[in-house]
Length: 133
Image (cartoon, rainbow, N blue to C red):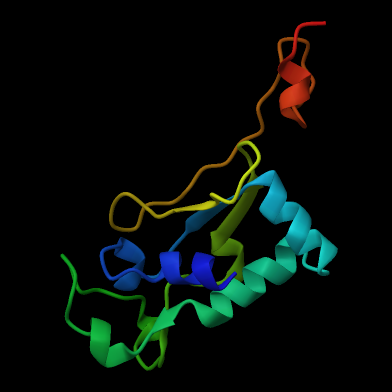
């Protein structure tokens, strides 16, 4: 998770200056390793929220619009998310060690995550659901 946290805290992202949502995309291999070691999505969210932050002097008065929620005025260090539920975690992709972090695109953007519904009305749970039988 250290590499994921490092990716969340790049100074080139909007989250460095304005805490908000992000999406963590884990490969099936990484998800399996984390599950084996006792992690679940809630524990991962809590850990990333607690660890992904910047020292306030590093981000004060920076960014396109240096505005932060009032509740963050005296926060140190400055978290990149407002709360753990800002972190959406999905498992996607193929085998291998290339998980990713998707940071927000604009100021105060919110992610919208909706299930993929198959033509028969079922919610897709796996890529296997898309295979023609």
